[in-house]
Amino acid sequence: MIILIEIPGMAYITQLVNTELPLELYHSPLWWKLFMSPSALFSKSSRERIQINAIQRAKILRERFCKDRGHTATTNHGNGSIERLLKKAAESIGRSDLDLSVYIANLEDDLYTDVEHLVGEDMDMLALYMPRRLAKEVHRLMLDR
Image (cartoon, rainbow, N blue to C red):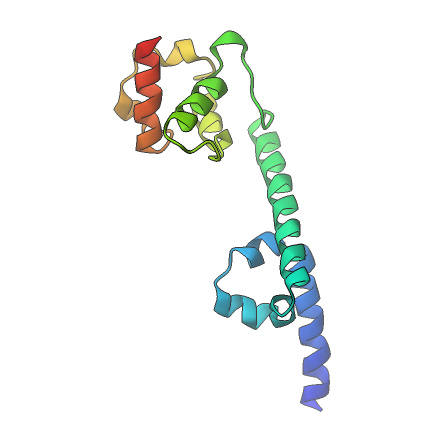
């Protein structure tokens, strides 16, 4: 009797996890994936579907984060754009794939909305808002201006 209730329940939980929590499932350790959604790991198409759903969920969460913070995912503030400076710095250190929106949001929270606002700040202050290696490169680029 317990088995008859348990099997449909686990199938429902697996479906629920795969559709509602794909990002969390995608980044979970293998043992957790096997526990929560074992059927999703058996076929390549299921794994690809979870990956696609995870990417879509990440985009949704990023948009929600930016909306809650009061700015868009791509912030532009004219010629002195912080976003352009951070992108150039990330490319210089070989990390062009880095998501800079969190660092931009952190800077904007403290009213650093333009590159001119950062002029004169030291590298240690920049490191409070972003990874130290990126902060070093941003500081170097600002000195070269």
